[in-house]
Structures are given as C-alpha cells and as structure tokens.
Length: 157
Length: 157
Figure 1 (tube, one colour):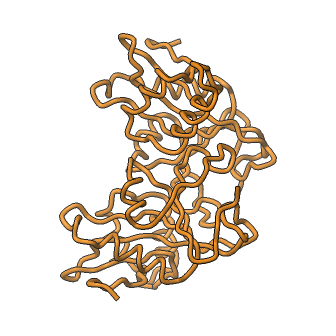
Figure 2 (cartoon, rainbow over the protein chains, first blue to last red):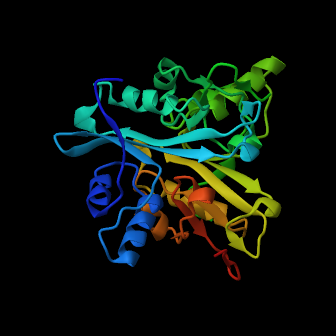
C-alpha cells in the first residue's frame, strides 16, 4: 500500500541480533533468545513483531498483540483488539514515514488498536488518527492510553 | 533515612506545573489537572506520587500504586504489592543518588515491588536489588518486569 514493505518478522538469531539496535530491548527479546537457544537450532519462532527492512537491515519495528474481547476494557462493544507496543524507528531512518507505514499496516486488520503514548508522543499519535481515552487510574496504571477506533466502534465510559 | 527527604506530593496547580518538567507526562497528569479545574479551587488531590525537592523545586518523582493481592500475578504467596512507575530524576540532578533514595523509600513499606525496566535500565534495577521475572507474554505484554522481593516472598512460576 505504501512506500515501504511491512513484514511479519521471522524470529531467528539474526533478527534477535538486529533487535539489539533498538532502544526498547528487554525481557521480551531475551525470552525469545532463550527459547531459540533451548532448541539449539536456527529455528524461527512465532512472535508479535513486524518490521521494515532497508538495505537488508531492520530499521523499524513494532509489536502487535491481539487481546481477546473478554479482556477488553476500552472498546464498545467489547471486542478483540490489538495492543501496539515498541513502535520504534532507528534514529538515522526517522522522519521518512516508516512509523506511519507500520501504523497503517496495524490499522489494516480492521480491529481497534490501543497503545501507550509515552515520552510526549501524543501529537504523533493524534496525527495518526488516535485519540486519548478518559484516564482510569485502576485500569490505566500510569499509562497514557491512546486508541484508534474503526467505523462503528466507540469507547467504554 | 537518607540524604534526601522523600515526600508524598501534594497535588495542586503548582505541582502539576512542576510535572511538566518531566519527560513522562501524559494522561495521568492531565487527568489530575482536569480534576483540579473541575473543582475550581486550589484543592489538593490524593495521588500516588512521591518526590524530592531541592531548592524549592521538584527534581525527582515516582508513582507508587498499591495493587490488591487478588490481582497479583507475580508474587508467591499472592499478596498486596506496589507498582512503581515514572521514576524520573531531572537531568541536571541525575547521578546524585536521588533515584536510589526514592527506591529505598518504596522498599520501606515492606511490600513486594514490581516495575517495568524500560530503555535498557536493567543494570540500574539490578543494582537496586531488583530481579527480572520469567517473561510471560500474555501477562507481561512486552514489558520488562523487574521485582523486589522482601524476606519470605518468592516469584510465581
């Protein structure tokens, strides 16, 4: 659809090495590394990561995780939706639309999306068509949840 | 106990203005602002924020939220515990032990503590006596949970 091709990432030792370039690298990534090592082969794990390659290098990624409707505390009617985390474009590749391309891809599933607008990124999320929710301290626990609503979906009060 | 005094923050218009200095500023803060404005008086809201002042200026803060044992998915036995977010020291005041002081204060409640070790902060959390959990994708959803265990408490498997 856009200028860049978004791919579901094949998680192998090469991908996990590429993940080290990203600022958000933690237990999720280390856990995949452990799983690969436990199998002791260049296996390809299933994962919720999508990314964009340029010149054979992973330069942007996000994690998209499908949450079952029965755990939905954001959307009306309550329904399956996507949680989007770890949207990140490597610094030299920023401001070229790679983040937007990943988000367009996420929207293409037609499900509502919830993200956490961290580090003063709210203007970016608003430009992407996301909106803030009404903050609920028990549910949101310090996050800044921003959501994208497909046609016919609204917010729980 | 330490070099610095940790205070439960009084949330009024002055505090919310000071919060704007911090990188992590989002819906939680805006929601408190809305609540104050709705009352139209210089009221003081209850909040989960603690901080350290220097020269009459808020220079470090954290949010500590008590989670009921019935929602506990980390500790054994399941119990009330604290979630710690938004630990942040303003840049010119970093590397003086203010972060450690806030964490010592959090530990003084004697409850287990869970945090999310973001942005490659795992070494810091380990130095503070925290440890990683075994990553569980459904529970942890991309976070890097690190926990502090008081005597007699262990981790759920």
